[in-house]
Image (cartoon, rainbow, N blue to C red; front, side, top):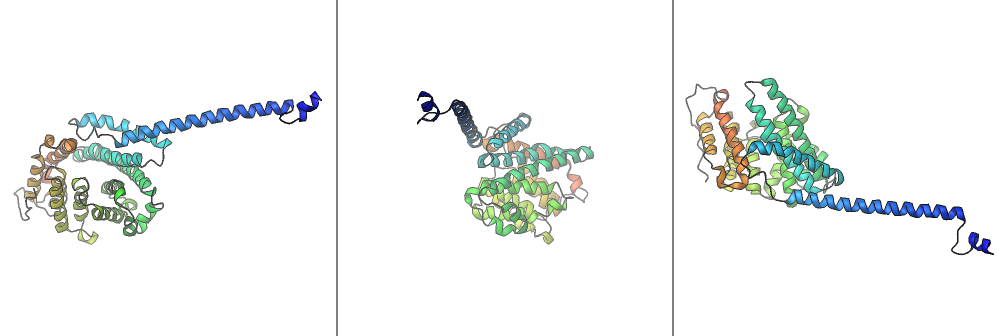
Length: 334
């Protein structure tokens, strides 16, 4: 009877079955512990990601570009490691899109431009690196847009205006930085038709951004439109519209951002061979006090470095002998 109950009675298992059951329980406990650990780890990573992508920006107000140059790559790689755990984290995707775009422009592309006359091979290498970083940034931005609009990456290439129209105000930062990365890639890949063919997508995104909120980031979209409107008329550009966007960008930033002046100077002023305007705009950019608006201090310092470099290379951009010609006037927008 005792043997019978141990082998087949209610609540009892044979010796082999008990061993297997004990093993199953242990496996379940281990798996449960691991799952719990993974859950806790994921929560910790998410908390860190939220903190890093929504906290104060300690870079933009810095007055030491070299310090920021050295610090940014570590920060970007940290964000990428967090993204491995949280591949659909919108804040991480936006921060990486914005961060790689800013880093590539401020510390790679501007370096390439400064080497253009003295080391063309070195400048070419830097432009190639900038392109890779811009494309990486664009990839993160498109991933961010895909979160709410699956398939929009391909649709932007095929039907750009229709695709851009789907984007709403909460997506404006992702829209802007995706377009900025994409447009920047085009600017350094003029010999790559596979990339330059996407110009319509960039313009559609920026036009949609203006429709959603024209004062985004104190006129940043208007500034981007200066570049897009400086293209030849055959590509849909218009110098008059570029100047309209310039005036709005200056007005929306209360004249405290140097970048609209530099953007108009190196695009429209050079295109129209207006040396006097070129000089005046760059001097206006240099007259802005970086400390007057701390949140844009670093941007102002870097933009003024570019303004000085453009003035130093001025003769390369103009066909005249150096005598200024101020045929086109810019009203004071302050």
